[in-house]
Amino acid sequence: MLTRESLRGLVKDYYATANLSLDNIPRREIAFLTWDNRMLRHQGHTDEESILNFAVRQTPKAIYASLSQYLDPTHRVPKGTDRKGIDCQECGEPYKSDNSTAPCPQCGTENEKADINSKDRRAMTLAFDIDYGDIPGSKEKSPKENLGAAARSTSNLITLLTTDLGFDESDLLITFSGKKGFHVRANTDGHPLFDSKTQVDESIRKALLNYVSGYDFNPTDFIFVRAHSQSANTWHLKGYESGWGQRFNESIQYILSAANNKETFEQVLNLYAPWYTDKARYGIKKALPSPKVMEGFRQACLKHRTAILKGGNLRAMKDSEAKRLFTFSLTRARLRYAAFVDKVVTADKARVLRIPGSIHGASGMVCCEVPDPEHLNDMGWVLSLQGELLGTEEVEVSITKVANTYYGIFEPGEHKVPKHIAIAMLCAQA
Image (cartoon, rainbow, N blue to C red; front, side, top):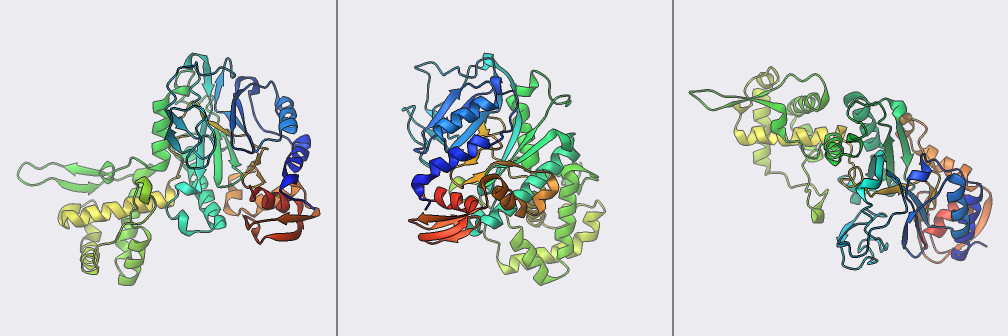
């Protein structure tokens, strides 16, 4: 009978035969998360076998590798360095503490500030982290629905990287994080945006992050303002044929076309209502104006639709209605085409990410490579692959509290299930 006490033995058995996927291991900082949520950073290893041997001995809850590559990955922050600002390496929550081992208030992981001397940094992998917690509306959805939303967001990211930013699909490594989303690592060798200096340039990484996520877009970025000497400025759509401009114009056309039917228009506005972006209310949709205002907006869309789409003045409708059209169109463009990427990971030079092939100790699932972008359309393969990696033989398992897993919800008591499901159930007991 497997119990919570059996978990470390199961993890040990897995790592005894596991395969990890990681390049340039001698130059990367390796980190391990213990089962009591202490992050062991600044570990140096020469190859995959060395990491796996450590994992077999210590049976960690999670294994990470730095995005940066260093001359000395084991270098530590000198004593006395300001440690007030810390980004949790497990959940990404930023917090402040004078105590270098103070736990993250969100998940309890004991982190330490890990700003390794920039002079020792020689390269940095371009990576994006998509976590379904960053996608608006995630609190109202089930884990499976949220994972599907994260998969769609990841698919959007692949499209943006390949069609807009010049990456080849073969340059991208897509991995399931093991729980809430996906990581995408991009090979920047030979890419015109990157060389030995710009590879670690934080401003370039932030610019890429803002582009694929649409974080900093403003509706006025996509319209042409024409000045007139004897009258007010006029606003016009630009004739974009690609990129975010084309996506914005397509959304403008969609909103205007929806005005044909009152019921459809209301459904569209409810679906693409803008959301709050502050931390306390993130993802909650803002309330729509009164039905009377919405009907006036619909009538304005009907009246001026043809002229607007032909490049006419958007201010022929009231400014408030034009701005409302901009807002709903940009929201739709982001929800349909953007990638909701973690704002910290891509630019954080001290960031570590889970190593593909390692176990996520909170979910009991293996962080694994997505074979190709088409697999993001149906996540059933993830659950099947877990069985191949962790075992499908029937085992008896006993749990003391409810286990909410991707395989289902299991009540406390004894169960007979495939081994990979048993591991997920036991991890849910932590």
